[in-house]
Length: 88
Image (cartoon, rainbow, N blue to C red; front, side, top):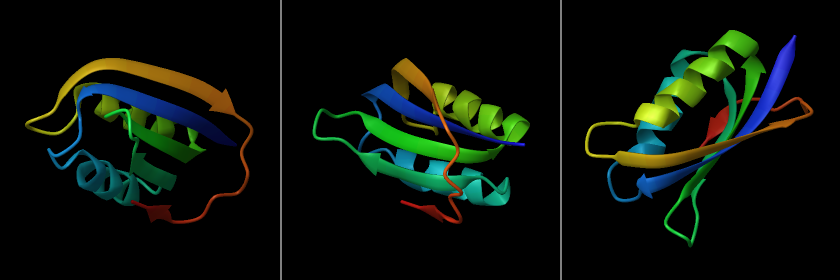
C-alpha cells in the first residue's frame, strides 16, 4: 500500500547538493515524487511509495548529505495521488 508524505527541511540545505542527493536516494529506492528549493532557504519534497521506503527517505532528509546541516524537519501525511518517477 502506497503512502505519500510532504517534507520541508530547514537549515543549511541549499547549495550543498541536497536536492541531487535526495533525488538519487529516491530513485535507488523506487520512491516517486519530487524535490525543490524554496525561496525561504528550505527544501521541500514529496515522497510516494512503499511505507518503509518513504520512511527511509524521511530519515535521509533528517540527516542530509555531507555538507548539509539539518535544523528542522516538518512531515505531513497526504493521500497518495499515483506519482511516478522522481524529479528534482
